[in-house]
Image: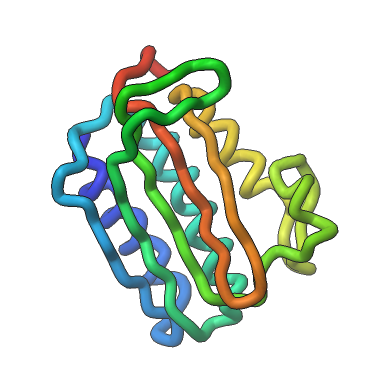
Length: 156
């Protein structure tokens, strides 16, 4: 599957929900190869992450969706020659320090209207592809990195 077609599909879904105050920019790596994955699972994971970014912006601000091919990357105990990295960046307030160690646990949220299941679900869906989600967050810049090996077993 072409990762950029999948990302564009997700951007259209989320852009229709968030309104005109949130601008979603793209920065794609044209050399990113095809990825073998379960489309529905990755759509759900990326929708969760993009919705979280939009929520963090409180209806106003930019989100950048970026793709990169990353070489020599280790996930768990497995070294991969090449992985796909899909990054979702916002300039919101950041994840509070007290939540950063537990955001992927169920029922943990900094959003009063949130369920605390979005990140945990996204992480589970990505892990089914042999991948993982990482993040870097501080006030004014949060980036979630979806790391997916290009060579992988069939997802569940």
